[in-house]
Length: 269
Length: 308
Image (cartoon, one colour):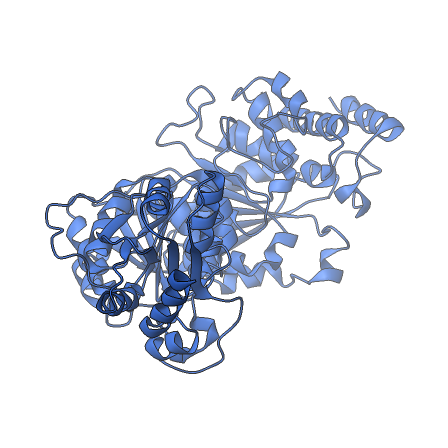
């Protein structure tokens, strides 16, 4: 499947999941749809039929609240049936609002509390390096998540140990749950923060598939350093009235708003 | 006790080359030989316990057998959520080692008093909680938790109790409490190095004509229900001794087990710390006296109990 088509499917599925379950975080899920689509269609060395292959690339969603988007990309990529997506948020489901690995093929790590995923990814990368394995570890974080001190503990460790098999991607949509990033805890100068922690930092447009593919095809672009892709994104991307809106971090798309959003996404097919 | 732990861990490396010891920048002097002899099995994560525990999970998910190592509350409470969400929920072979249970670092102040760790760690799902009382137990438990593929919390005390003299042919099982000496007046359940105070109290009580049973609870989770149910039936009462808050620790565990099984001991007493901080400066021995955890206090309390 082409990555553009996959991204749109992720958005539609995530929207439906948020609607049917009465869930939130739709803005955060829409924000990462393009990054996930490019990773799962073109970059990750994975096999949906053998999700536990030893030499597979590992992908961790550290911003676990956007779990709907990951469930969607896994189902659309063949890890499990898309019918399972309808159980999201429902009583007895495996698909919790924050991403969980239990009984969900393809999920490497359960997250939900921010500031955990990069650390675990660093451990995976360190183990792979010790064992001279060649797979890579990708960790997708949110911008607000970088408020957590544990992220920077991981950042220091990763550069100190020269983990060039580790790739962090940051969904830099500049909006967190109550306000903008700038009004909450400013991250800028963000790129130079990562560079000062010893990382190779690259800024990309997180919705530009061509740019994402060309950058991510070239890993590691610098030997002996972990790489962070600061992906400039738009929260709520793809649904005009959700874009760049703090409201749609928590608001659940229901009724007319859901129909309007769905119609807009379907027109993009 | 910590030297016995490190020596035993070192001796297991050839058999289990996937062991990795990650320290949070602690272990001055103690880890030198390990670091020198097994550089590929040693990582200093720096003063960053959340990251230490996160990377422990990541490495364990890739097949490593991890020991995280620090002192007091740093490898437990500081990174409790990483233990819960990352290690326990993913069911990995991460063994969290805290050196300095209870008042081991008494003079260093309350930041270094590990006095709630047993209660808090015991409340987590999918974890084994061990607190050996003797050199023999710490050696046996080290191998056992390497072989046990799940998360484990190992509390290592600065103090240590005598083991029973004839344990050479005894097999060690995680979760199986050990009777160190038999008696009928009451059974004293104990965990950790405070066993040394319990032995002293036992001997003094024996001099007064009262023979007590001592049971070492090296594993608080999973817990050996039979040991306490039998003791309730066979002896005159149940006493717990722990260098930990009485809220949620060994004493609570005994009470819960007895009540859950509708087994009522003739007498029951918990000896531990009340819910309070110690701002008093002093050695482990001194602070035990201050908080009535020393042998003399144990004797007094047991006498009060059995003479009631």
